[in-house]
Amino acid sequence: MPTVKDVIVKKPSDEESAVCKAWPTWQCEASTFDWEYTEKETCLLIEGKVTVTDGSNSVSFGPGDLVVFPEDLKCTWQVTEPVKKYYNFG
Image (cartoon, rainbow, N blue to C red; front, side, top):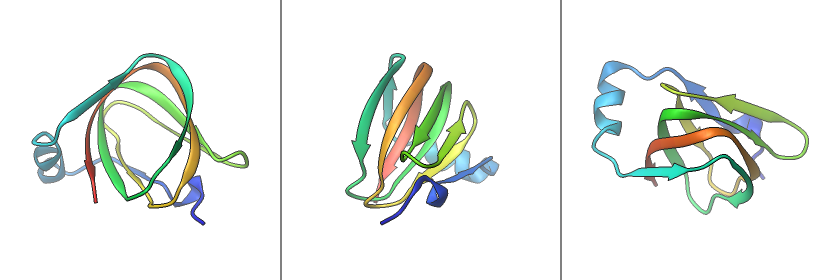
């Protein structure tokens, strides 16, 4: 079972950013909610701040970060500033 230690957070290359900007967007107000990934998700944060925790560990990311969530990750999203992101599953 993956943990948040398996989440990848990095600054994307210009090429990666261009690919991401063709994806749909998702928005969320400041909130806390549980989430389970049934497939891999890659996203590029446009705005906002998030901390994702699995109960033992946590990872934080914000604008400009490219984030990859592994399939089967169970976690809690803590959105501290409203989020807007490009996302892609699979």
